[in-house]
Image 1 (tube, protein in one colour):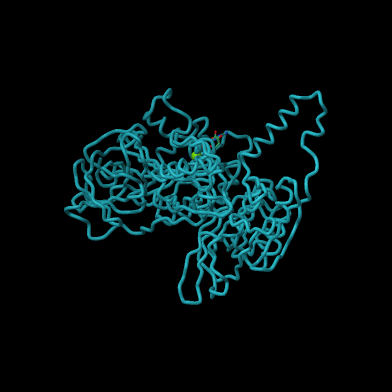
Image 2: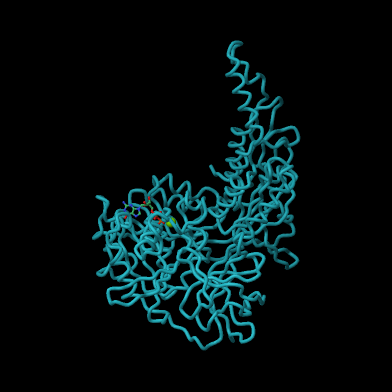
Length: 597
Ligand code: GDP
Ligand code: MG
């Protein structure tokens, strides 16, 4: 296809504003797929994604559109991951396109991820077409939301497209806007191959599939190619595109998006953002902006039943096949036995992996408190990255420590602003900006990431009755007065419950955990002491008195079925317990370490 007849675009939106519904509608309108084949939310391929309504892996679809000018265009729709944890993948997907549709729910207005995503799109040099969705809803206020987009983002909305992705109103206007308002791609077909690696995933039949955007040159079946960052060379086995069905072709040309396969074993060998070039006639320079994504949140994953260890190891290896941003290494805990220390792009990423392990691989796991990556500068001049609080060196050997900070954007209706600002202050936040757009406030804060990985998001939702939206990007490292708090159960430290925290919050956090553990650890036949300590100094303590009665004692003789139920329930609970010396600690107690007082 001629460059002038290609349009590459993505859709950016806050979650639930209708990105997937619009994508489905566009696919349908271009006749790429029969209505009866149309499953809801075509582009969200994994089950968990569909259930949660989020998109994890970027996918692309090539559509053929006959425009009102009589010409047929190739439209490449690139679906981007919707969540902040995947910001790097979002920016790489956007680098593969020339324009974006900015979808805003006309009954909700601009939200935090609307802003974050539209700024990514503007940074990528995109032409942005505002699209107001859900105009079928009685609560839709398109005029007010248009004004808000102008005020907050500074985009001209006089040509905004009004649609209902649900009923199909305005879909034709969206297609015409794509053709008439987005620039066509540029590229030189005679130059050495430069293709941006946008995504890769493991397919059980085809092996690793690599999604690329061709910038210059031609990618052909049979060609020997080279990845510029990893320097690995492969022969192209097949290439093609998705409609969303897989279609094979013999070559991909400048401006086009598509996939290729080669004998690549694991996605770990392919890096999102890398440049693919011709091995025999390589490009002089890679495309700009490559940086591998690094895990920022780490936690331990341990099988509840030690016999599941090998299953867990195999399952992690399988997940890793498909997710190069997820990392893991073996870990041994005195408390929890053999498991793995795992690194994630953020909390949502952690939750998704944990859920897939439990659901798809049928594993019962204990997750330890997530920790961010600290930089420990030791007195001998060395710097160490700390992924696990249990590995913190002796304070005498530490010169100083640094922790990662984020820049967070929070949008919230006026009436909830007070508590939101208080929450940010409690979490050591520094206000950067506070502005208003209509009755909504936008607060920009710098916050230490370790104050956010606990329960910040849940707290924010609850104090704003679900109306606040939140987005962040990792900012920089800064020196901080950090200490390790150990939790002792009957004088034995439980390594999996220890955590690193700012000195100012250490005591209250330690006390909070002791109180919670007191509620969560069932009474046993003897008294249990729970303590929080910084080094040798006990900063909080609680005790659980000994149990006297049998749980079934209060069920009188006759009610055998009730008695059995109670015992079964107790057995069920046991599965989720770990033994510490003589003390049994339930999984919920480990999770409690994540929640703050
Ligand atoms: P995404 O998170 O941006 O991908 O949003 P979805 O496409 O999954 O849509 C979120 C919800 O909004 C779903 O329940 C959709 O059915 C609904 N939705 C999407 N577009 C419209 C629309 O135009 N009108 C109405 N009433 N609902 C819509
Ligand atoms: Mg979606």
